[in-house]
Length: 243
Image (cartoon, rainbow, N blue to C red; front, side):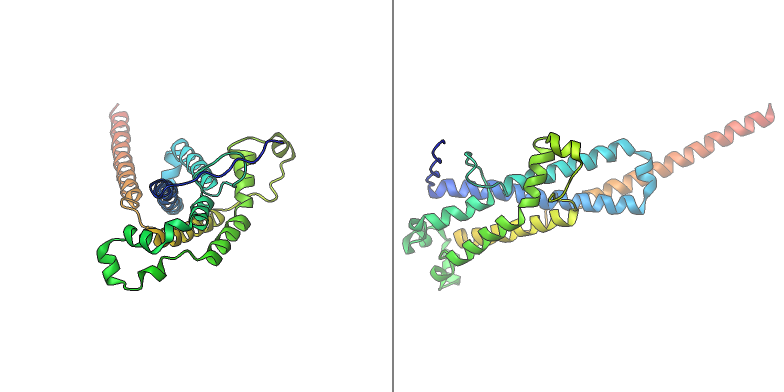
């Protein structure tokens, strides 16, 4: 059996890159979930839009579901598989295993001066809470199984036995489950990032409501097209009557 690979030793700068990379996936997940949900709601309100562009919205649904599953799979990817990845769990392992990052001197050097002045007890607030990390790692482990099964059996790979049997027991199966995993990742990442550098990320993304303008344009365009067709057929009908 191949010996287990030792985990990489991180510098502070490398850990910040890791945090940023995971954050980018979580931010994209929030944005894509918001857009996906908004478009589904609009198509339910205005079914004629879906009827006029079935291939486009079919491709949109397929691409968005794949994106959500693959991004979540990256974030919740299990450790110890022989690969070292940018995962949410790794964001917790590094602070837990590197006490040198959380000495008084290291914390003081990392935090902005204005923040330290406004928060005299900053050293206490930015210590590693090992019990919280253990709890968060346990929550990741408990909540990712259905996602990993779906990602591994149908998205990253197409498992033959799963396809032939048609069994989907133990697979992620609803958008509510997807949203809960996004929220959990956001909560854990924010806690880790705040401990590290007193920074957090928002769920609201600039431009997340662009789809509203898209639907307004589509509906106006469809109305214009409908009026044009009515007038055209009216002219055809009049010509036939004169003929």
